[in-house]
Structures are given as C-alpha cells and as structure tokens.
Length: 188
Ligand SMILES: [Zn+2]
Image (cartoon, rainbow, N blue to C red):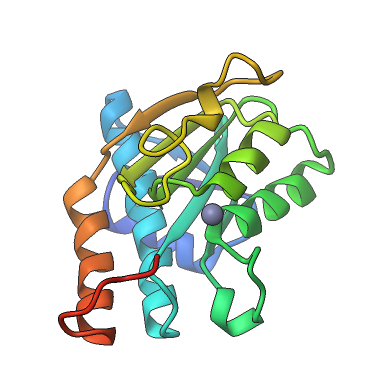
C-alpha cells in the first residue's frame, strides 16, 4: 500500500497505522539530513516503546528506497534473550520483508551506536549504510571502541553517519539509567 506523507506528524500517524513494510513518498523535497532525522525520530519512537517496557531504550529502523522494511526496539529483558537488541530484531524483520538475507541498498537507523554483536550482523547482512544517534564509548562497535563496520579485513563495509539527533538519543538513555540506578554506573 502506498501512503503519501509529509515530514512530521502525518508521517508518524501512518507509521503507527501501518507497521509492515510501509511505503512512503515525500511530497516536499527534504534534504538528505532531514530524511535521516525523520527515520531517526521513528527509531526514537521505538526507543520510547522499549522504555515503556522497562527495557534499555534503544530503537532501530531499516529503510530501502521508498520502503520501511522493519522497526524494532530492544527486548532483551522481555524475551530473556542476549541477542534481542533492536538491531538484531530489525535485521530479521527486514530479511523477512525482502525474503533474502542480503539486505542490499538498505540503511539501518539506530538510536545508539551498535555493539560488536550487532556490528557483525550488519556486516554479515550486507547493510549498505548505518546511521546512529548516541555514541557508546564503552561498548560501541562502530567507531567508538571498535570499528567493525569499516574494517578493511572484512568482506563488506558500511557507510556510517554518526550523531544524528544525538542529544535526543542520549537523553532517553541517560534518563533510563538515572531512574534505574540513581548515582550508579550503567552496564549498557
Ligand atoms: Zn547490539
């Protein structure tokens, strides 16, 4: 199904109504930066869904051309699964939507820099581009601690853009950990 959208609220309305492989059209001509912010805001809505479930608030979206192939949030506690990071779940959704494990010409948006597990999955899935919000100095696998997605020794590399809506992506995480462990360090 095709839906016509504008930047902002109408887009988010359709996002809630049509979660499966949403097709979109920009009526205006947004810049690439504005398009990145639209999808990072969608990922932030997913992070908020994680927060409501008392999960570490991280959200992710996969886009290919004019389609949203998946959107997911961290569910590690809910599923009691160490692999249930937002990126892993959304990669599985995107592969199902494409009926293929190679996620060619896709962009994955995620609110927090992927860990080493997810970075490996991004390389394995041949994702074209990674856009993330908050940097993760303690566990980041995409530029902070390691840079797996741009390692020449591997057989695939991604284009990476970091720091999109970084403040919003950082704040939601800070708020979560401040409430959960007042004064204490986070382990994520
Ligand atoms: Zn991860």
